[in-house]
Image 1 (cartoon, each protein chain N blue to C red):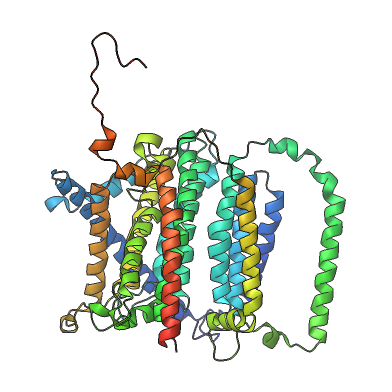
Image 2: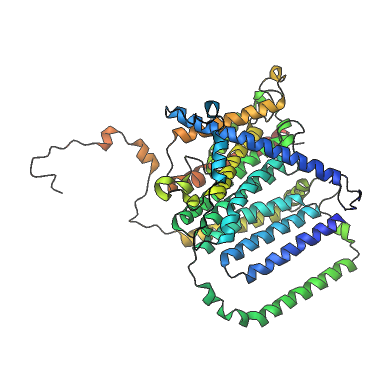
Length: 203
Length: 354
């Protein structure tokens, strides 16, 4: 009973905050609503018994990704009231997409129950007698180790690509070489000059 | 969540007994935390004063012992000023976020055997998640102030905290590999038996010299904790010589007080994390000293690390922002990543993993 109540509270908060992500006037507030949506989704994971996934969702999405979102959105200087002028003209297309998504979800849900996967067993997060983290670890590092490695490689390639695309060596920028700076001593740093009065160094 | 029988005269689907006990535990923990925080704050100020050869607060109460309470009253009775053009709701929510997050992190901290509000299986991840959320109070507060210095402070703090979380995460993984569990009580239990078993030294791994890895990891964790809590020498989000007071410029009265309490609670939480992860939590350094209660040892270690935090603030000059980023990404990240590989190799090949 309590679980059902908790589920409905968390689920409705998720859906409501997801709605406000789109509806909020201010983009910063949109991101904050998104964070609330992530949070209640993490709560749903806990309810399923997948507490490790819930923590990961918070660490990765709320703790890092959404911070960067917020970082970027806060620095944007766009007139959003103007940008939202033609907002309603996207309504038919948006409705179409959401209808397609809803249909797919319903079909999948029906197929799932049809295949006699009873909900509790099908939805159980971990096998018997194994903790959450162990179950995930066995899946990722034992059963699907090669796929995991491949996914890591794909991410590595993407990261290197992003760095290569944005890296510019600007020749005129002064850079700090810490080792050189620390390695300076009196001999290399100071030179004694004899300056004749009234002439300067001639530079 | 143990007893869920629908009971009692209210006929609620919750156990009233469990709720009351949990509430009482939480309330007691919070009160103890707040009162000890008042004296830790005083200690902080006394330490800086001693370093600078001043006396520090010494007027309110004997030796200034009641100074924090006087400050508390002063803050509470002041007027709350919300700047014009500020986002009113977010402006007032931001300090609350910092304050609440600082408290809920403590829910999983075991201060003595069995003395913990929620003994989560993923306790350390929970702590990591909560400490990574701490950035929101600052960034929202800085943005909602609708002012330039707070905004710059907020941006700095966002970049800084995200950067140092990465190395903190890897260092936590090294400890997890030794303990084989994410439960904080298990991590502490695994370091029982004397200071040579603490993760800082990890001498139980001899003849494999893992202390060569773990001592630097302890130091890096401590430095990253300074950066994560915006403490000097990494207090760039509130660097007074550049940004006046950073994200706190527009705050006054109780909202400012909430920010300050939250910040200090986070610092104490980081001290507690250092204690639990590397210094054996509630265990005495020698077996024959364990006639003192476990809570004493835990508190003593936390206070010691708080003293270290205060000394760092008193002694070390502030970093420049590019130096801070360089330290985080180019030095700490590769070092801690390498440490994860080394510890992982040790655990895999020594048969320490069950």
